[in-house]
Every structure is written in C-alpha cells, then in structure tokens.
Length: 345
Ligand code: TYM
Image 1 (cartoon, helix red, strand yellow):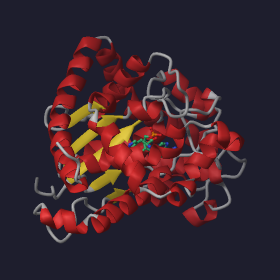
Image 2 (image 1 turned 30 degrees about the vertical axis):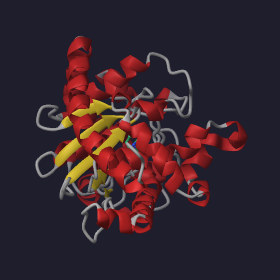
Image 3 (image 1 turned 45 degrees about the vertical axis):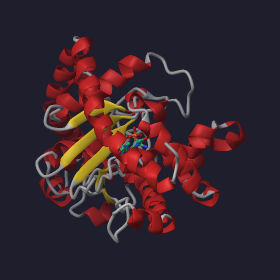
Image 4 (image 1 turned 180 degrees about the vertical axis):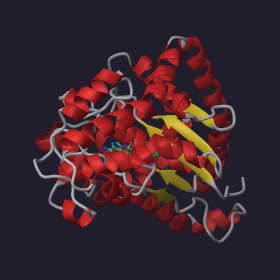
C-alpha cells in the first residue's frame, strides 16, 4: 500500500462529559480538516477502559461521541467515523508496539503520572501502555497529521519515536518488501494550534478543563442547556480588575486569559482583537457577551446531538459502516507489518 500523503487520524475517549475543551481543541479542527484531507475519526473505546475498568453505559457514551462528531459537521460518508473496538487490528498493532517502545519512553509520560497519581502500583498495565495503543491507532492508517489539544503533545512525540524505531530496526525487511527509503510508517505531524489548544477549568485557571473533574461547574459540556452555559460562565472564577488592552497584561491572570481565549476561539478571532473590543470593561459586561456567543455556537450542536441520540440504530449503523471501511485499511497495514516482522502465515 502506498504511503498516503494527507491522511488525518484522531480520537476521542467515550468517558462522558464531552466539553468545550474537546470541541475547541480537537473536534472543531476535525471538521475544518475535512476540506483538505482524507479524515478518519475514532471513538477510542479501548482507551476508555484503561483508567476505569467498568464504564457506565459504554455503548451510549460511544454513541454520544459519534453524535458530537456528526452534529459538529463531520461527514461520515465522505470520511470515516468509527469506534476502535470494532477494528481488532488496533489491539494487534498495539501489542507489537509494546515490543517496539522502550520502558524508559513510557516512564517519561506525564499523563500517566497525572492519571495514576500516588497509587501508580495499582494502575492498570493498560493505563501505562496507553500511548502505545494511541500510536497504533494513528500508524495503523499511516496517518500523516493528527489534530489534538496540547495535552496530547507528548503522546504524539512517542508515536514519532515508535515509527522511527520501527523504520530503523526493520530497515532491511522494509526495503525487502518493496517500501521506499523513507521507511514504512510516516513520522506523523501533530496539529496543535489556535487560541484554544488548552482550555482551562472555569473554576481554576491553572487546571485544564477535563471530563473527569468532579465539579460540573468547571466545564461547559456539549450537552449543557443554554441556561446551564450562561450560569457556568456567570459563576466562572475571575478577578476584580477590568480587561486590559494587551495579552501580555494577562500573563498573571490565568482565569481572565482563559475566558478571552474561549471567546476568541468561538468567535474565530485573534485574542488580541477580542481585547481591543473589551479593553477597560469589567467581567460584568464581558461574561454575558461570552455566554451569548457560547450559546449561539453550541446550541445548534446540542440540538443536533439530541436528535441523533434519539435514533441509536442510525448511529450504530454509521459506526458499523465506518468500522468496515477502517478495517479494510487496517487489515492491509497489518498484512504488511506481519510480513515485515516475519511472522509465519
Ligand atoms: P481525550 O478524549 O482526553 O480528548 C479528546 C481531544 O480533546 C482534547 N482536549 C482538549 N483540548 C483543549 N483543551 C482542553 N481542556 C482539552 N481536553 C481535551 C485532547 O487533546 C484530544 O485531542 N489520548 C486521547 C485519545 C486518543 C487519540 C488517539 C488522539 C486515542 N488515540 C490517536 C489522537 C490520535 C485522549 O485521551 O483524548
């Protein structure tokens, strides 16, 4: 199979509470890339069981992410939308990458340290080797570009390291099977850009907005009603000073900087032009404007998600069809990878 030139892959975990950070940091970029790239978007349900073994209603959580993709504007006919566990090759390649990746590489992963906390000895082996599965997701499709939020940067560096080691260590076999000098797996480029690569919690400007934060007031969920969105923004932590003229003056004001970043991302404007509009104003004026903008942008997605979730058979058929199409590519890669490894049969 020839190396594709502009193939995008990305994934979202079905662990509940899909939020504005997921939307601005990832899903909205997924939508934009459809114009220029061949895109594969995955609900990564195998990843969802690494941190918490038993997931409440995993099937519906999986459908909800697919519904969010489609409601945001991803076209599952032109591109591929599927869930990871329906394509068994993800697990197969992840196993082989367990043998490519080095312990030291994984021990450096800050997200494992954050998620495992003090009790690392009791974390699942799956949580530790999670980045190898993520590399398998991407490289199974030999994707060239991966749009993600800033928190996935280190995992993508690891994906590049795995691809590099595989290409290097199997260099002779790769050439023998007719692949070019550049190796078999691409050295994937992350796409991490824009004002919302790291949306912070509404309650604490130094912690990121997250699905697992216990306080629901810390995030805007894609399923929140207009009233909830307005209430959460009204109660968002800020400081008493008025908004300044320049972004530099927000360096020491993380909560204010976060809200300006959210506004800028939603309005698709540079943060500086948002400040030019609101300089000198208090949060009492800015917050209602932000709430209005957020509701305007999110309400149609919310309504479409609800509609899609009312017809689960339809979502299931989209995911089954996407999985069938993903599997064709995945099986071809695995056939070649097995040859390169030298497995019999
Ligand atoms: P997940 O499910 O935690 O998040 C999905 C996407 O949302 C981004 N994101 C954010 N962006 C900005 N601000 C935030 N506060 C914020 N929180 C989350 C994430 O960076 C991500 O892009 N490991 C991945 C899922 C994954 C994956 C992959 C991604 C599995 N395999 C292959 C890309 C390619 C994860 O846990 O994302």
